[in-house]
Image (cartoon, rainbow, N blue to C red; front, side):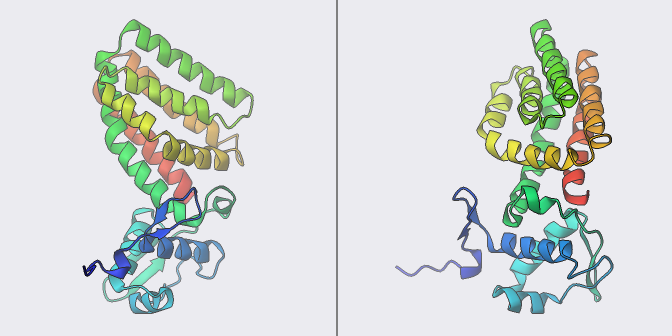
Length: 243
């Protein structure tokens, strides 16, 4: 039987915990690596799609997919007829926390969390019982303790979001977070690990966002809780990819 699947669409094996890596993720990671290492400075024009395709041994659609992710991350801008230009250089510290080929999956995880957890916060504000509110209180207090201890606090961070998901009283929200615990905590490790390099700014900012989510849920304001969760996850994604 002939396999008609395009070679460019075939996933490659990644060295990170045996996960498969799409070719576009490899191109994406290589461009980020070159931006971080200042091969491409801010404002520089990237090589053309044809040149990138040839240098990576892939098709132009693969390159376009990688460039689309870089635009979504706020790292490049594209102008019709002029090409793609470096908009922002992420912090070099990213290389200490995440293999470059995993960054595309981290970005996808943030996208998914924005969709799911925004609604989770809305429903939690409406459906939370006294016991649920107490659990969210305790989760927030544990996060504050982690900050005082200058600890990474990923366990407490995940626990806070899980307590909110459970307060929806729709088990699929909590089940979804638990099934995605590994990629979610991987992204949280990256975000909070980078944050520890500037603890006087980053962690208090994150905790203030958590506090706003908590307050909205305690007040039973579903729309406000959804907005606060959306803002928090959007800011978390920005802190990882834009510094």
